[in-house]
Image (cartoon, rainbow, N blue to C red; front, side, top):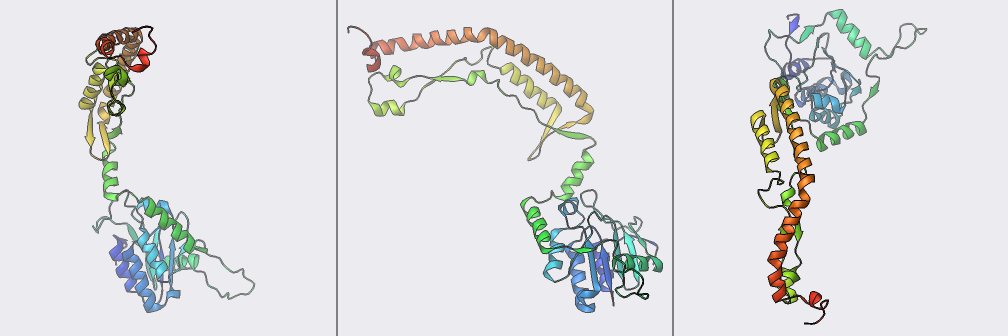
Length: 331
């Protein structure tokens, strides 16, 4: 066997299946392929001869070191899991052979199957002994005066409650699909997401309600209830309508950003400087527009009021509502 190896879930599962007396598996996490192999071998050599150390945590699953299905499979089949918080290295010992490997976080990269891209080293016999002793020290001492050794890692077992808690958290908020996440990271050096919103510039949409009595006079109550009328304070096309500002915002979006359905809009990082300069110019245009609104809004409201009054006077004169007639002396 070569010293430098390329290992993946299938390779690990095949090695586990070849064991005759003992299996020790340590890693941040595992998937259902490896979990199934551990379950199968436990039925052959005995569950007490299968030792599993994992970091059972949300972060491990969100990085893609394994999945919750593998953990729950072990739990459901009576294989206990020893806890090693923060573990980020892997080792597999089967009988007297073993190797040390670097688990692949799928959030960063996909697993590799090319033998020219090794991620594991075959462990020497002495290393195998040291790993076994560090994780499963002997219960019986040759010299009774010696202090009983304790495991370096995996001193405690993972409780079913913790597994259930992590399982529920993952179900409620599943990790992003790792292939999508990796693509985003690759493109992250060239693009970034950007969000632009223009608020408070829809002055022409502000309306006032016209009392129905002024429109229908002494009409029946049912008609009055069915009739609704509003009047735009600013006429369409007015210099206060904000159309010019919205046009500049839309042009800015069109020139610099591209929409990605369901995700948002992206901007090339190489164009960020020009984009920020354009944003600053837009902010100045908004300030000037705000000043113009403050100066001319009262004039526009007076024009609107005069037009509305001129329109309503004939209808009110011909058919004045009761609440107005009762306040006028004489006929």
